[in-house]
Length: 256
Length: 218
Image (cartoon, rainbow over all chains, first blue to last red; front, side, top):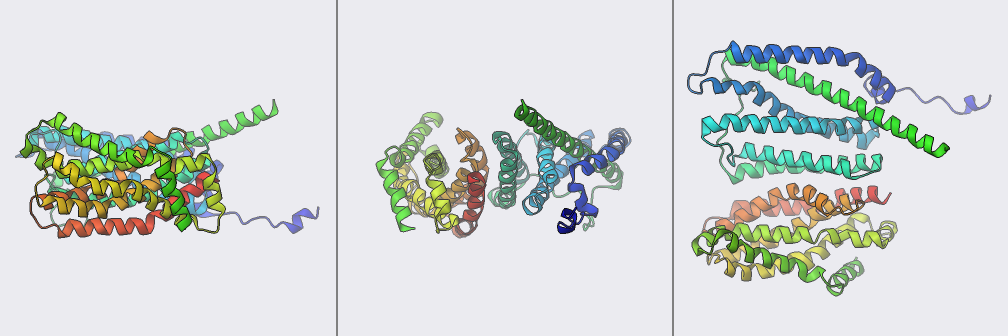
């Protein structure tokens, strides 16, 4: 066979990029998914029970302070989900790995739910504390805008039939949307002064929330990160299988 | 480029509907607002800058789906894509034509509609300035939305959903200029921000629009 001499075997990608292969990706995700699910469940149960039942009430806010264990992690994940979609879109545009585009698609509904949880828990907390369910505060407003961006992104995915066209267009939308989301964040800041408190935790700050609240909150954040990862992996697997099924169906139809 | 601009302008004027439609929509919105909120002139004059900006924005949005859709249907876009003119430039020209046929009439008509909403005296100048600076951004961002959804049948609603969040910064700063102007306050900061957004968008968005349109023409 002279063919093998002329066409050198393309170099197998190794390391991180080898997971662009759907088969390898599926194998990997099936191996880590059970562990991820259990870990995230464990973190959430421990963190939430610890937070809800074994921390003292705040002396001014009473027991409403405990909504922090849902509000802060979900808000954090809502932003990071969009950021993950941005990275995945970039990888799709630059390296054309289908798994990456599908991961971005799979992350969007999870991100929307996180945004909704953050908005809802914020409203529930704001009612007794600020005396209103909703205020046009910069943070609240930019979260609502983020929610609209998620909706537009998902609607565009749903509207286009051809999967590659849809992946391309949604990626472009994700890039442009990210720029405008950041722009809106600062524009909204300029537009209205805030009611919302500053960041509850950051690495470079002297004063964070008190330690009693801090550690269960960290456990909850870990739980939310893990559950996000698990859901995205799971949904990406579903998308890959769905696309495979479609390909098989198309082949079947072409044959008959 | 000039030929393309001339063609788009002539089409917009002669084909009917496109040219006056946005303006008529703007008028309707302005007329309906007092029915909704009541005829007290002090209330109207307080919300007039925001309403006028919102009306202009919606009128702009309304005319977006004919920006590329007709050329898509009759194949003009394919010709444009294969012509020596870069697609980025063609789309910039199209956005410019859209602004001349919808944005500019809105700017010119806004002071007249301001009278209907009893806009305070110092507000007229700043309203016109903010609209002159802001409406080009609306056209350019709208071109991006149109390029994204041109392949989708009846994509008008989808395009509104995609484009409206992108309009947020422009609307905030534009309406802020008009409001501060109407209340006789300093307008420099939001005016500079508005101009910055418009210039940045004009510089960058045609590239994104061209990428999206190329994907759709593939």
